[in-house]
Image (cartoon, rainbow, N blue to C red):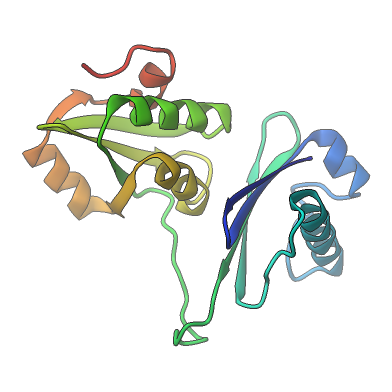
Length: 193
């Protein structure tokens, strides 16, 4: 089990096929309405707290996103929305088909981000644009919601939005460097010039 702290309110946990077997659960059986899934989630959060040497704050709304791994395991992304005057009835819709845009001030950060996306096992469609000294990477997940990709992007650059309008604006006003497979090209050292 690999546990990584992304922010004070977000962690990512990678479970191997053996981890899933030890927890006595499969990806198909994961359903938060079932007591066994809740048991597994709280077991993982407890272990994450011990591993990270800190209490995992779940006082806000806990969002758990799961992504199947081809190896038989899965990746779990835990994030907590703290209650800061936000309506308790507020809901979020994560559209899997929307591109997420992330801006980078330099090529080094852009390449590091692409390498992290590939290393994390995310399958994405990606495009790369340039406007003066800025780079914009547009990423659309093929396997999971935006919640898992955004922390990875924001670690290296500035997530500036998502959706069809931003995609259209970028395509019209920015110079396209790679219209497909940008992440793969960058992660193999064939970055933008």
